[in-house]
Picture 1 (tube, rainbow over the protein chains, first blue to last red):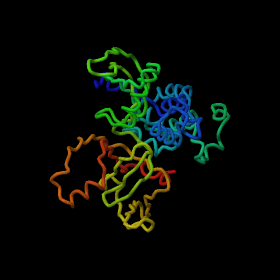
Picture 2 (cartoon, chains in turn brown, red; picture 1 turned 90 degrees about the horizontal axis):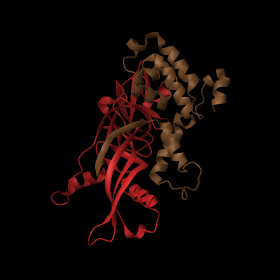
Picture 3 (tube, helix red, strand yellow; picture 1 turned 90 degrees about the vertical axis):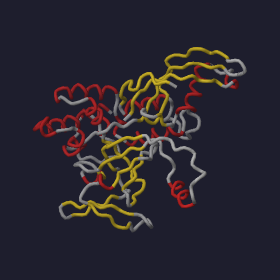
Picture 4 (cartoon, rainbow over the protein chains, first blue to last red; picture 1 turned 180 degrees about the horizontal axis):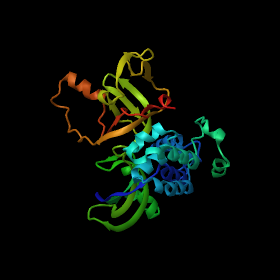
Length: 139
Length: 203
């Protein structure tokens, strides 16, 4: 066995979830007929609980575009897409040197995350009340 | 968390699969060979993404099976240092916490990397269990198994496979080795920053 390419590209949780769904993971309640193995089902179960279950390619593209003005590293954007932080505290852990790089733009950033990325359906978020038509059309 | 890696492998296709379509047979063999296995420095294989090329098909003398050189891509679970992941508590001992992602259980948070200052107390619910409690501004915040715990990846290591060791050990050492099965990939996490730890602490 030879490793040709160590890192062919990073995948967001959403993309892996789409991959598993395209092989039939979500549709089979008995979990026997689909051509997906039990270990892949465990990954599927885990990903369904993360915010990735609501995201689509368009949402992610839009989010990446919006992130350009904040000058973030690719790994940080990936982390934010996977975690969907909903407050400034959560953003501090993800982004290095947050205070010096973002200064007062943190609130704009958090606001943008809340608008573009849909929340996890089971989390009871107070933001959903202010929540706009935008979130509903995305779903 | 997930990366694509391209691998080339010489695959022997057993004769009982010859009546199947080649792509399916090779994919099935790759699944059984790589899924849920750890490849050193690449991580845990989660899924076969696609097959790039299939070469060969030679039958070596004395063998009934044909051998193919296959190039394919795998989706690997490989957390990078600094990534923030949310997981569930699996067990809590005097050495620290052990967290689980469902498909991957060997995530350890040793005591020095827990939120500090902290203290441990015997767990009222589990016998012999230890519960860790974070002290912050006079309040006590316990770490229990109710909600998801966010941790930052501190280190990912691939300990070498232990050699066969049945012969020289005496009973006591054998007991210790049996209690923890070998983990080919160990992720060390830390909870020592703002925003990490159980979600209920920050929301």
